Image (cartoon, rainbow, N blue to C red; front, top):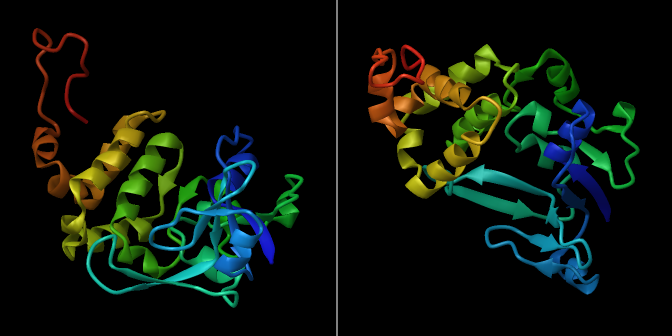
Amino acid sequence: MQIFMVGGAVRDRLMGNAVNDRDWVVVGALPDEMTRLGYMAVGRDFPVFLHPETHEEYALARTERKSGRGYRGFVVQTSPDVTLEEDLSRRDLTVNAMAAPADWDGSPLTVVDPHDGQRDLHDKVLRHVTAAFREDPVRILRIARFAARFADFSVAPETMALMRAMVDEGEVDHLVAERVWQELSRGLMEQRPSRMFEVLRECGALARLLPELDRLWGVPQRAEYHPRSIPACT
């Protein structure tokens, strides 16, 4: 059994940002083994466990296969044979598809980075990991939210093209309101919330999710009614 720190904790530490939440992936273990070690099972759709002392989340390495429309249409497979690289390949963005040993000292040289996430961090690019990105429409919302958090990052052209294709194929129409609001509300608390809406509009998702806001884009806001607003919704 091997344990790795994954996702945002690795990304943020490489960026020199504070790490508030840590997620872990466990390779080569079975659920029964985790419970014997004192971990508490909490995952509904796939095996996730809480550490008996820190209460941080430890997920068994897994793969996903698309089985239907929307963000819940997946078949999840967990097995001791699933590799760390296979688990990282199912993630959304290259900057989130990195892992580090449990005793990581912060060195970039010891990061497991099969999709060049460190390069994209350096270049400040939000890029999808694989074409499997298109299978989950929530990832459109996540990219928009990350664009609001990392205001100086750009969305890779090929990723934006993939997002437009997902909108055209009707994937975002299968998102439930609660999931949309969960991502939007988090984006509104980020460094530059307007970028979230800019990205959603550029890929066409804003017209599907918030058509009222999309129709207001570019409409002048008269100063006598909106003295503290910018001249237009941009």
